[in-house]
Length: 258
Image (tube, rainbow, N blue to C red; front, side, top):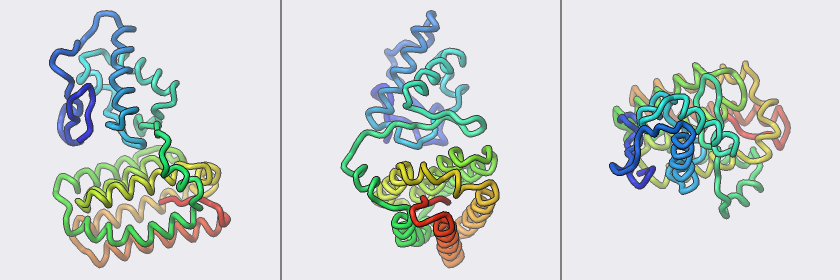
């Protein structure tokens, strides 16, 4: 379970998301000192891995309640984290962790072509979806529906879509209730953040294609909710083949999406 300030993070649907030590200060009179303290708490959670790359932070209002501070103070802390490139903030989408410690997997990620990645996803995701249909709880399905809604409400740009799409597919991995599957999908998402994808995503992810991916995502969620294994597996397989065709159309080194 993720932690911040030495105490565990609750599950996403619980409130508040962070539990701070009881002896930590809450509201601090000096706004600048308060902002620095909040920034340090979040920075520690990010750099120590409690908050992982691509994860969405709670809204400013929630963070203000959690830390006992004003929204202005929280916003100042988030602004500094963004300046330090630890988070990315997207209008209409939220604040996402942007920090990745260097690891041996990074070398693999840099060498993996987008088409190689989509081939791995075709090998992994149909069974991942099968497990999600069979094993997901009502709470996990609620999270998946929420992730879908965020994608559909977000601004139509490649950066926002990529981040929300990573979260959506990670939610499906979590619905499988298989920790190794979740870990494997985090690595898949890490590959999607590297240079080849960044060079191609604006070309591949047009507004029309984003709308089509979201339509496919909705039919997939509906099949998972209906506990329809056959339909869900067919939908995700077709979804990935569609993404592969877009990559081929954009060039052999285009990056994977959807």
